[in-house]
Image (cartoon, rainbow, N blue to C red):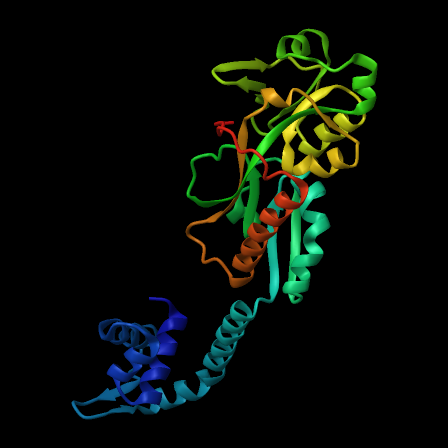
Length: 313
């Protein structure tokens, strides 16, 4: 048994004068309390308590050990209480990891709203598109798009986003606006995205009713979703990305949607956290705020319009 737990059991027995009361205070079975004391006495090689059917009393060795360990248990209880208060009061650091384009175009501009609601929570954000080991890297939650890998993590869908095919106005003025998938794939430059871990290329997919067109040949590729968007804004070609992420760029005239009647694919944006890890109150509050904010953002930008059939991408 854990040595510190055995010490706490010993103190509770002394302070309550009863194995049964100590069990109740600690929320442990009475048998565990008895085993904890026996383990401590075996470790010390000394008898700490005299037990009768009516009462529990300290031995000389027990009284000395109780005196010397009072400060230890006091510090432990102080630390426990501090963490309980921190968890319920929504303070401390929440470590999140967010895919690049969502971080730059959606989340970072909105963090001030979260801080207004939770001023005592520090947000530490990692930005990348690679897989993350949450336990190894000390991450509370990760936000990703697309189909999620099978894992021991708990996943919650925050929003179902529509994919949009787009290019810069300057590119379309120079090369023309394609009127069909065949024209797009045959005569235009394509800008794509590939996964950081697997190098798998995400196809540009256009569908209408039961007809599906896919392109896997690209003139330029990025494994950073924000990098792909920068290529599109820079006039490097036509690409497909998340509507939620580029809606403001479309509204500002930096990007122009094309072949919208050939759209229709959607992809989930999800938050994941370890199933074996107790989720802190500050993490829960962040996820709850983000869910609310995305719904508001989608309505404000127009991303909530039209939710066609979901893709497995």
